[in-house]
Length: 231
Image (tube, rainbow, N blue to C red; front, side, top):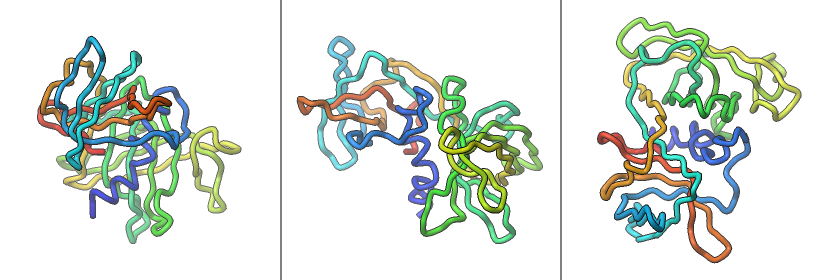
């Protein structure tokens, strides 16, 4: 169940990676799909990536010239510093505090991507995603503490809170403190290259169907040092 909740909380972030890379907060186009599996082979000459998907289908995907390769790297709370741009899925606890379910630290090339705070579950309004700049980090123990964030949102809600994505409304500035508890995964998204596309590596791609029926991708996350893509 935790995996499902993280997908809800961070789906707007990681699954929208192709649009984010251009600074566009829009969601992935309807023609796009997410493919996960393991790499069978990669031919740099033809840019054809062969993948066996999680449901055991073999697919061939053409990698675009502007391909961006990302890999996940494990981090701790002590690795996060003021000025970092992060995305976090949160759940409001009974005391009203927001507790992180997962934290992603983005590279500078993705700074501002999907910035804002927005509810990610109609069934549970206490579940949200916040993409924001770190203002301060308070670490009280190993991987436990809190992060203060500032962000640009869409518009102020009735209670004065700043909600929505930056640029999606009248505009507002939000501040929030996120509680980090022991065991919460903290992952840095790191820019890699095509040398990581080796047989057996787990991979997650945003794939577009071309008019001729072929599949193409310009953004993917690949396994490195045994750390597999989360989404």
